[in-house]
Length: 463
Image (cartoon, rainbow, N blue to C red):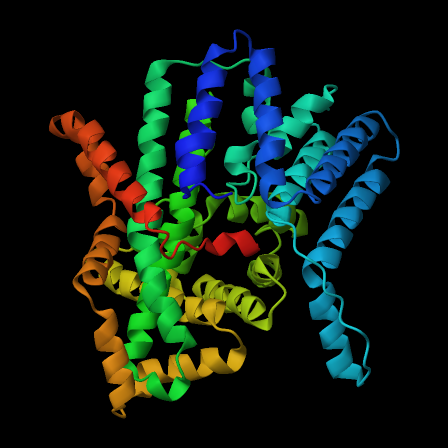
């Protein structure tokens, strides 16, 4: 079940909210949220829901054990090793086997293991909880139901944002619930739904069509159009999902941190990663980059640490050379920025504009490889962006067929909404009166679109 589905919007969420409002106590509300969260996950993963419960029980017990043990470091190392082993089995077993076969000439059978939805997200949340207990930043929770609810809470279960335990520890047992917060959450949810259905889906139709076309048809215009549309698709798909998750958090009294802050407005790749998928980049910074030494051991070591972190960031997204290259590409850009004084100075005026252009271009090239089926397609695609001047009649016809009025409107809306203009407009006092009518209009259009059973993928399901 995805948030952008009629089943969820029309049945699941309203029913859960109604019963939640009727529950008289926090304990009752927690029981309800735990039950519906497990049901939500079991709807799509009836078997792997037991894996998530087992993972929660394992981390619950390990956190209590670590807190009072003199072998705390060894226990933590074992917890991390178990989690990495689980991810290796489900996400990387086939990739590692194929790599071994290609390097050694062996013919080992390639395991075909179904990937549990959201395993990377709930595994990272569980690990962060145990690590924080080890560091003494939080106290081990003695109530298993609270740990399980923290890990399985359905608004952020399958695609984040990655929530740290200390951010919601208090709200698990004591949180406020009022009509104003619920209304705020509903508007945020609808805004995210609009991003997903009215921008990301239309951009995805163009990107998927072009990336599936024969490469000889992809020339200059098609290459740039496909890259730009995918860049908008992945941003509005995932930031829309994050908005929906944060909005539902408000509906139920939880406050999740922002996951995106207009990343395409950044003037450097460093700034981009302060704005893009903030919960993931923050997780790697806190639990990998800083333990490696961070920026405390000189510039060269800082660059090495960033390179390691971004290699892991790429592999976190999936077992594919294209993801690894995407991570290393960003790591290289950050290394360059570390050594070039121009990037370390405060940007303004023309330099800031040039910085924006540089970020858009580099991020777009990176996302071409992120989207490509293999490295060869990514390399050819990028080369066509700069050298694809040969005219191809079929390619031109394909590009023109995709430039429909609705797709052009969605493209323009995506560019407009990538900047903080809408946010500033929404903060203006005169705009407050139209927030609800506009939100209800967006909801109606989205539901009409979904009722048609049209294209409605979700990119981050596979991570």
